[in-house]
Length: 151
Image 1 (cartoon, helix red, strand yellow):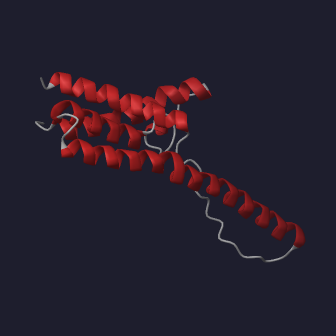
Image 2 (cartoon, rainbow, N blue to C red):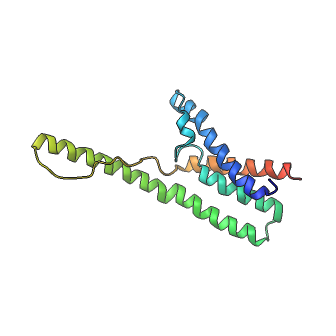
Image 3 (spheres, rainbow, N blue to C red):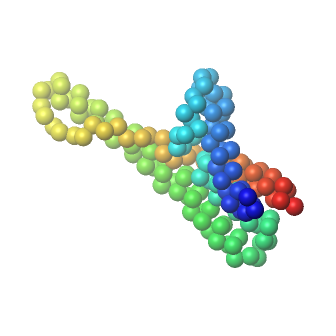
């Protein structure tokens, strides 16, 4: 592949997803191989992907290049989304799942029929600030390695 920017972006995301396995083991003390396929968790692969791309763009084209400006702007949006909007969505899912469970319990106990769709929502959608920082580190390191390999 002769496109270091694309390689850096893809490799940063892959590295971040793979790192979720040992980090999850360190925290939970059990192996969860599916952690590499799950959204959320440490480090943020979305953040790693964009920071890897931005780092490589900076190192290849310089600070005053329009490509760097574009990747920086998109990276800022992705980081805001990962730590802000998507995290709030995950917290809403927790509350809605609990509410659904409570209504189902009330229906059984009171023999009522308050209908509510009982589909379980994913609760881990966004990232904590430390998970985003982890993605930033993975992206920077991967970008540095890719640029070094392409010199």
